[in-house]
Amino acid sequence: MEERVERILAAFGDPEVAHSDVLHALAHIARRYMEVVMAPDAVGFHRLIIAEGVRFPELARSFYQFGRDRTYAHLAGMLFVWRERGLIRLDDPQLAAVQFFDAVSGDLHRRAMAGIIPKNLRAAIQRSIDHAVQVFWNGIRVDRPGV
Image 1: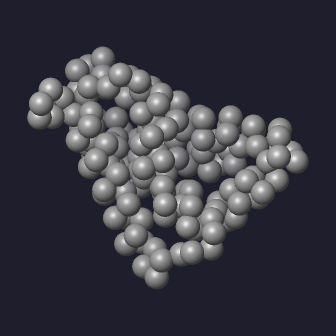
Image 2: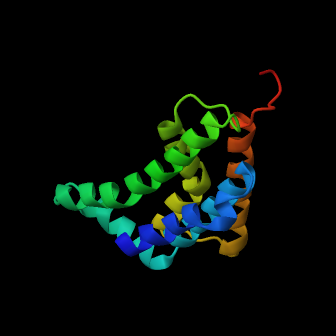
Image 3: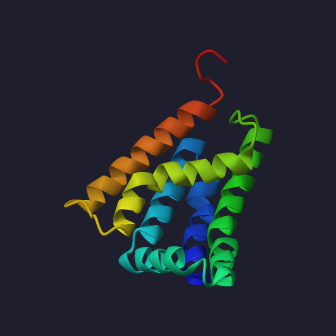
């Protein structure tokens, strides 16, 4: 689990991301996230956590604490910095980070957990990323209409 999280978090520290514009950085982070969470073994592990989390609550807590929560916190930190620099408008970076990753993976990941994989998974992943990043960006960009 830690190795997977480190692969996702590597996108946050990548010089390409750190020195790029916010929209490009979000797309890069979303791609790395989906590469990791949509891998067949990761989907299987998540199924196991969901199925056995009630019987083994420490396992479920660890999964979130060392996995998803760390990933969310890193993005929240970036969102906070971007907000402080005036690059985005956003009230709650922590909640926004969770919602961003949920939008990126959303229905596609839930279906994969149920064993429903699209014929062209790569295209479905890219479509999910593109749409989620654009919708999220439209909500946080400084120059958004009506603000």
